[in-house]
Image (tube, rainbow, N blue to C red; front, side, top):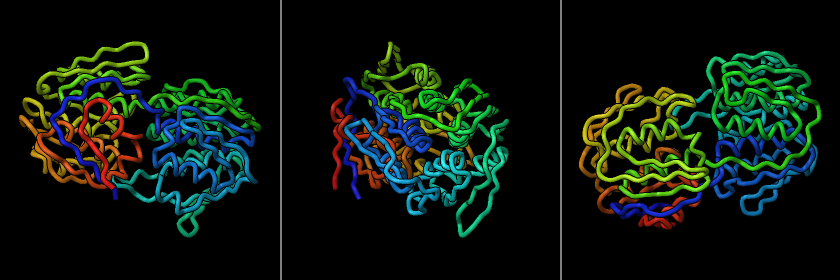
Length: 416
């Protein structure tokens, strides 16, 4: 397994261009299952492991995927299968998003139950209940969920604003004649991007980005050319890395409107954030002020940036608290930060951080994508050398991260 060697305490300075959003690209790529016509998806972070797994899922159910840089062409290769293979679903939970398109088109789909992951169980019961509300029948067979019976458009209320369930339901509704209303829907920018793609395919979608999404579907959808939005989580991670190293970074292709909660928290902690049209400049001098916060669904502070934020708060001038309200087991990075001299005490859903003047390099291990990003942030700021193991987690969500960081002054290299 690859490792990162990072010699820290070197400020990041310069300009970085963001990749396309992984969390937007995944459902948009799977939305190509809604049509037999060719689809072209642009600004896709094609080097990410999760994106590569998505290509394999599409090919396993009958699509052909052609990749040219960040441009992906998906078109029909053979009749679509309505069963997702377990060996792929177990490696990437987002594979469950095949259910919506295939169930709506063919009235039957078989999807393995995704396993748990390091940050929590993340059950799919919200997805399943939504499909049942639209008329599906659910049965369990040998670890697979079978959904059958033709769906019908209608009203659905989610018990939690799940991003995945909202996306699955929107894709299904796009292929159902009639009006489907989704209440308590997720409001993330990735939901809005999926809506724009579905509109390009011929569905009528309104309310995306609000708590109520209305989809007027049609039986036959067309191919589409669509460009994926920039990755706001990558942007937030680089913003925190700039602040933690007391540097200055300008991020190109950023969308400031997607980062308001992060920007507000950074400013409260003492960072300077300047927003332009399509770019953000972040700079920092000295240690941050301690800022306590809680994660919450968009537009709140994103759970995917909780770990990098906590890493920065390890250097604060005082005590801060970070409460995790979205996932039940998302503080696995706390112990690794402790190996670097961070003082983090976790109790239930809250981490209490006592800031220290400096972190020190150490051998550390990533447990998931965002915990890995937190360790990169900490290692860039720390004195001495850190060795990060299991960087395949980081590769799932950050495209060419070591090359990007080297271009702005980081001393980081990948060791095979």
